[in-house]
Amino acid sequence: MFLTGVVSVFSSFKLLPIHISVYQRFWASNMSETNGKHAKNYNFETLKYSTVLKCLVGPDKITRDEPYPSFGGIPTPLPSINEQRVEKVMNSCLFKSAIACVAGAGFGIVFGLFTFGVESPSYADPAKVPTVRETAKEMKTRMGSYAKNFAAIGALYSANECAIETYRGVADMKNSGAAGFVTGGIIGLRAGLKAGIFGGIGFAVFSTAIDYYFIHR
Amino acid sequence: MDPMQAQKLAAELEVEMMADMYNRMTASCHKKCISTKYNEGDLEKGEAVCIDRCVAKYLDIHEQIGKKLTQISQADEEAINKMTNAPAVAPTP
Image (cartoon, rainbow over all chains, first blue to last red; front, side):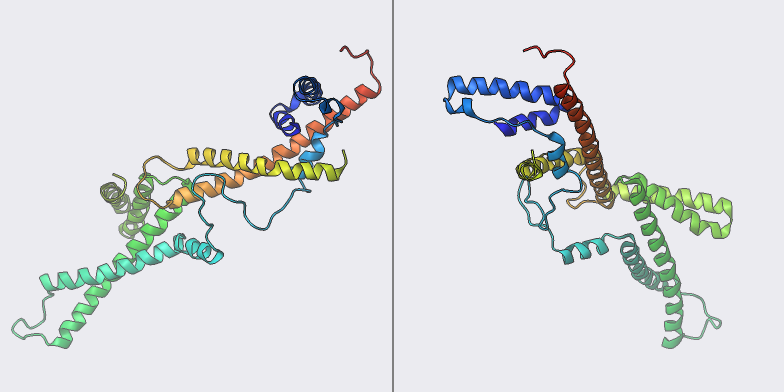
């Protein structure tokens, strides 16, 4: 009807005025022959396309407060504003790197405990049996150093990977490789440029292998 | 055609326009942003970021093209008005 005339105009706007008038006249003549006599008396109006467009896109646009109903697939309710906030925080780079930092610290503590049990440091007097307090102090320093190292590695790697993935906009395996290179480079740069480069390459290979094996296979 | 009639017509057309735009936007941004290697059910960070940017760009372009279309159709209508009000040649049937 009138609507289809307008919608067909939507696709061929260059032929607009001529197309509409020809279509209307053709449709009127067709209708009057097949459907009834009242179609002959129908009053057609010329459509001002730009006026209608201004109400669709432009300052006079119809604004709604509620979101639109879903237009395809299974209608799922939109998440509430609090759910959206929580999702935003949980998917942010800062939160991810904080989680990786804590996880790294925990892993470092366990690793330090284990290595201390396997090979304990030597004491000044080999014959003397070390007391619980001395052993605990040695344990604490070793676990602390390992925890600090692994926490730094985890936080750096996670932050780098999140930043690179945000920049690229692609969830790929290259993200882990690049993040590993940067992390290894930063850690290795403490011992010079060459150590930094080699450390970066090594860590990149390692992180890509882990990513391939566990996630992107 | 006065603005009230135009607004009524626009209210009818708007749902259709929004549905069409939504479908095209989802198809286009899905093709561009979401890879076919499904490693996990949730959107990954890169995919979510890509979708945000794709939707923002799409809506921006939709508005800009709409404004350009309004300009062009206004110029067309003025030309047609001039032609009908002062025809140089008699119109052929």
